Length: 194
Image (cartoon, rainbow, N blue to C red; front, side, top):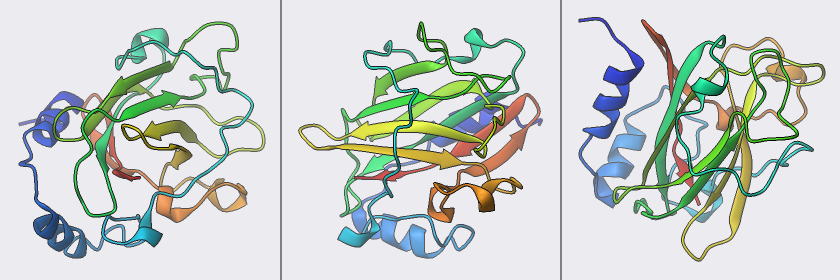
């Protein structure tokens, strides 16, 4: 059966919720991304990065952003929001914004910008496009994540294997997406620990 973004998202959404001990065991058994922060210790919170000049407050409650850029390569970006004790954080705000397929940000409206709240298992996802490169930066998504009643984490997620990663002063390996190719685009996963 062909792998599609929808089938990968469905598989992600059907994952059973893991308790803290099972999540720690799962994280230790997955050496593919050893630098990705994992829950379990205060020092392993997701790294902060600057918002940059293109953030706009009051983005729409929207997770399907790809309709704003029909010429872009589709990607579904998904993950969990956990606390540092591996507990999923339901009702957490997750906000995304990024450049379009030409490397431009919408500075007037809310194209390729949206937010949502995590579900009861701490899951979030956006259907969007892969942002183009633009001068001075590697390919990336911007995120703001806030657990209920907590402080706001501002960060950026990056694509593995990009030639510009090493020259970007904000890049860090701990912020790499776990990226999979699907027949109709890509699927990237990242779990925020706040």
